[in-house]
Image 1: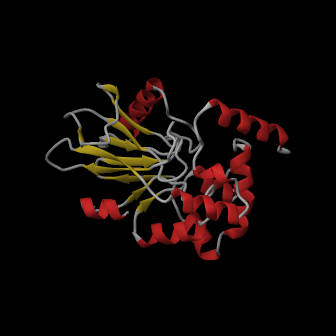
Image 2 (image 1 turned 30 degrees about the horizontal axis):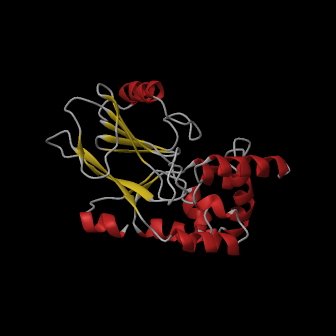
Amino acid sequence: MARLRFEGVDRWLCAGDIVDYGPQPNECVAEIAALDPVCIAGNHELVALDELPSDRFSWRARQALEWTRTALSEDSRRYLTALPRIASLPGLVMAHGSLADPEEYIRTEAHAQAQLEQLGREHADARVLVLGHTHRSLLYGSTSGLLDVSYTEAMPFAAGERYVVNPGSVGQSRDRERQPRARFALLELPDDGPGSVRFFAEHYDHGAVTEALRAARLPKDSVHVRPGKVASIRRRIRRLLTPG
């Protein structure tokens, strides 16, 4: 938030999953609410509020879910309950997983293209579809196809083209990196031009998050799913040993 304020922000967007996994759900809700953002519900909010079943959750998410349900304050619950599943702004639509399903993962070119075709049918004036859910940055153009995300400079949009933009995740990085980074994006959508998007991957004090997770008796790797064969084997063993 400090970095984006430095860059200059006219309006804040949040693509959901404010709570769960992390050890400070009420603080996260309060910080987001104070921005007066355009914000939608992610699948983790919907499951925590019993609006979706938890059968698609991993063992890590299920473990965090029960703790989060007991930790959420009434103020946090009221804020999350009021969140819509889709939000529309001039030139932009925002959903969590996909336009139809907050639990659908949009990872492939075919899936992204199908989303843009649906965007054209249902929101003809929208140029950009913002998604979350995957915890990975993504930029896909209806003509350009899948584009390599740059974290060093703004990436211009082409005139007449629609885009899927996933800024990545501020928390619980799922990129193959040893030290997790907070990922987010800055959109420029002027009325008189195609605009651009700039992606960010910032260092943060993930050690403090790990300590807070440990204090709450939550899985410490909820802050970051570390890459590598050893870590993968350990996760599989834990899944086998975890009931349910």
